[in-house]
Length: 117
Image (cartoon, rainbow, N blue to C red; front, side):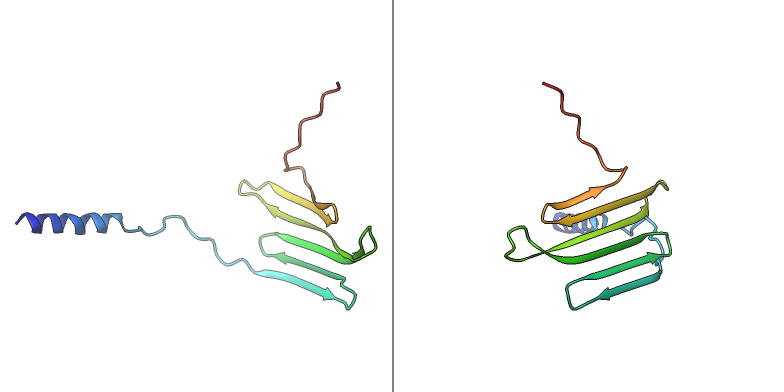
């Protein structure tokens, strides 16, 4: 009898602990309204897209000879635009080259100013 009670308790605990149905509503599929992509034989490219929710992205890239003249560096420039959950438009512009990724946007944190010594 005790064994049956323990076994039944284990089944009840397992049933309660199982993942429940997700209560967060899933958004519908957002269509891609426009998509363009162009490549050439010299390592240059341009791409862009626009989706139904107003999200957009553009990017251009090209190979550039590095500062030592011994190889190439892929230089990219682009922008991304989307809306934050509260409806605020977010605009991010960026460059990526031999100096790394350099984003610019009013939503990004800024470092504190360096005090004068």
